[in-house]
Length: 196
Image (tube, rainbow, N blue to C red; front, side):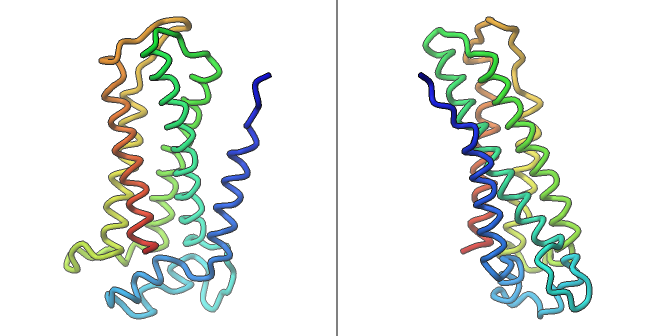
């Protein structure tokens, strides 16, 4: 009997959201302070959507983090299902429609969540980006996140459409795979530079 792991993704998303919430310090705030690119005024509760003097954890900064982490989680599901689809084509089998649907859905979710993370990041931290500071922590995070989002969209656009039971040659999907892989690496790198 095949084990159903559909509850794994919601659990992973909840765990990532809780880790972000209980971590205490917002990564962008830490980065702006550590880089010396601004004072506490560069990032405050007003710029993150919390309002003056607000101590609420629910603000644009938190939304940005949660959306970014969930985009990564959806991207991991997309990567896993896409790898399985490519493997099935490589061995001469046709992927099931449920696998293809899960791949398409998780890919769309990853791209949509990445776009939402970019929008909330822009609204919460728009004043932090400064080209005069070079590739500091915040600028690197912003550029990598934007490039990853553009790449997720490119991967969605270049995804091949196969009819039920149709076999695809590697040339039909290799560009799609590479765009998704490079974008995934950039998304992970954007989190690594802001967290470490």
